[in-house]
Image 1 (cartoon, rainbow, N blue to C red):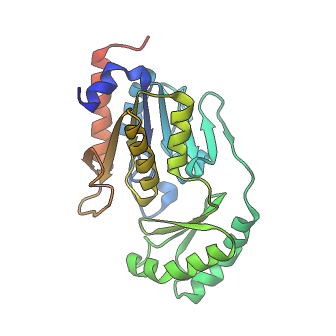
Image 2 (image 1 turned 90 degrees about the horizontal axis):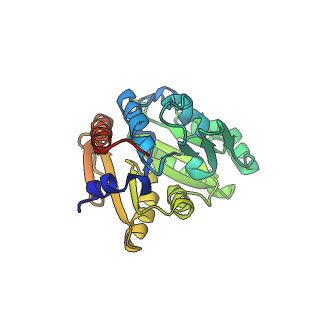
Length: 271
């Protein structure tokens, strides 16, 4: 039995977890306008009633992912869970509420220090995104995004280190946040709570490596797992060699989810 057939055979024992940026939504110059692909959300509304759980795992604040995904309209997604800030925050469609601990003082201090650091490094125009419990420095709007990212990597890392925080690199972004939570922790929390027979994870960025590692550990335990990588054209990523399925970016992700919804629908309605 192949892995998709395992999902179709026992959807009520399957967890589908997805990254947001680069998976459900395209990477765009303004992260606050990174709206989810409408076809992906439409497909998830059809998929979710069949599955044990659908979850979105993202570095964004949970409420922001909910807004950009249009996920507060619960039609079909009444049991959706959004795990924001790498799982520190949890939003459940059933309650519409975000549960989260307070923002660490160290993150507040870093937010205040960043403008001077960026100016001293020669990139005062780099965009700083306040993510609540984290702060991200984006270079994708700059003339040379990769060069600016290289210039900023060391001073940003030093600032984070001085405040006991960690840096999470991504596509033209450096995110500073408290340690102790990553997407692997979110995957493990879902698996421990739900005990699924099959775990499907889709993600595209360096922050998803920890999730891939956690899914690989589930595979070693004898569970069926499926890793899906929506790769941008020409992208060189360490996720490619680990993925079971490689798709053509967020459009390919939308097509794959739609096909899965079609197959689940053809297999029968949930009880």
